[in-house]
Image (cartoon, rainbow, N blue to C red; front, side, top):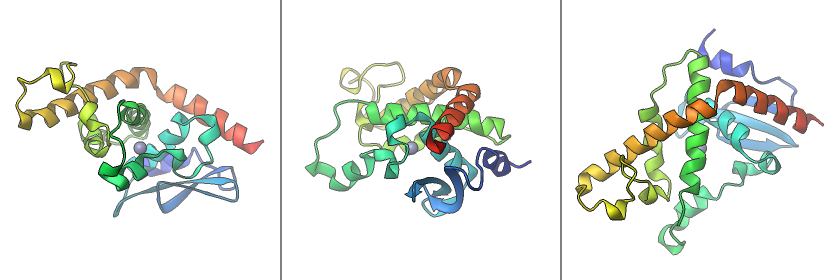
Length: 186
Ligand SMILES: [Zn+2]
């Protein structure tokens, strides 16, 4: 079984959560939740696993909200007009999602590199709040040269995903997935 086929075993054709090829992210139509395998121009099992992990991670009352009710894209669009994030909440959610995603892809038999996964997090608006690799906040790490800051933050993110993988296991993923699908079916 290839990795995409493995991921598709989680879905049923007429269930409340369905797989849709070529869909970007997530969509809700007629009370049915669709998860897709596209992010930007490409399609991949990794992107589908990411969306599936968002579904498992999101609060129950946001399961059927378009874009999971995450404000992330708006923050990007309004740029400097919006307040800069003061907490690492957005990134922390993505890290929990990526921990599930990595475990899911591993179970699917796909190659996973958590250092590659976390690279996308440089675009999250709270990236400047990510600590240096040694855990020091950026403003207390004046000795770290500018060009070393991003790689150092990325290493912190990678280490954090690896820690979270121990808690956000495949078993927990399955349990939450099934619970949520049952909840949507009633
Ligand atoms: Zn995400």
